[in-house]
Length: 306
Image 1: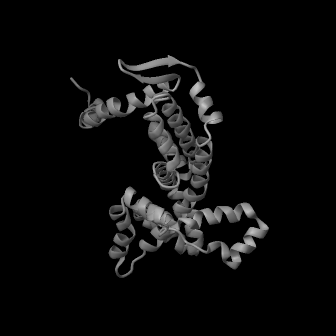
Image 2: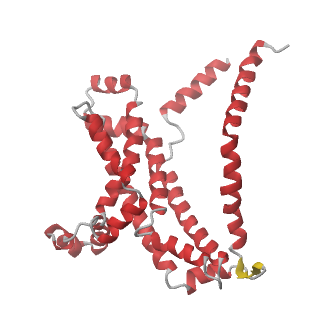
Image 3: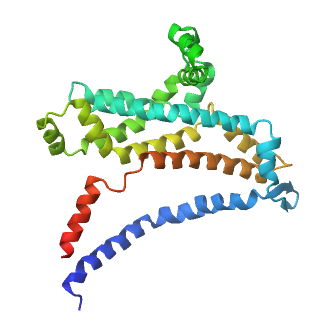
């Protein structure tokens, strides 16, 4: 006989089992086609893989592939540095612009649905190859920015800042293209804000600027984290600008002298760089240990236990 107090646990266990059964095809596919090849590349990165008539021949060379990638290859390190500069420059800009546009598109106004579709339409229409062709033709860049007066002033004061701004505005249309999905994520977060909290803040004579910085942004901190991680990954798989790293990986795969070993080393160094940016995003945007919501939940559990 199942006691009444055990029934909620039994029901929750049944729901969990049902959920895992529904997810089992995806879990099996992920383990077979993604997780296993991903882990196997670690093994291959410590071997020299050569293609022979009898198949692939593996020769253990230790960290030789990593030494070649970081010290002997003349293209990999500059490409990796270019990718890191792009992440540092583009990712925060995309997140900030996406949040501002989401605030504007969340306001009640005429044609709001059409404007939302307009900002998301490039994500659907302009696929990766299409955007790459536009970027390669120069149609996605803003020319003549280095001749502007304000840019010349910044260049005289802080050349590194001027170089970062030039790198940003050189493909600014690509930045706007990347804002499609983050805008949707921010709008979803804004629509789930508790209206009573905002009304109480306005009753207490809080200005819109105070509401934005003290209520909206702290509550949307998890959304900022998700958007930042998505943006970092999206930039890392983009094949124009940062594509040199991905092109090196693909070319190393079909190289009979180095093969999968050097390509695996390239891929793992590149993956570690992406994970570094994701870790920085976690450190910057993680929730504080004692938020008001967590304190309230802790007190509720304390009182319910008595």
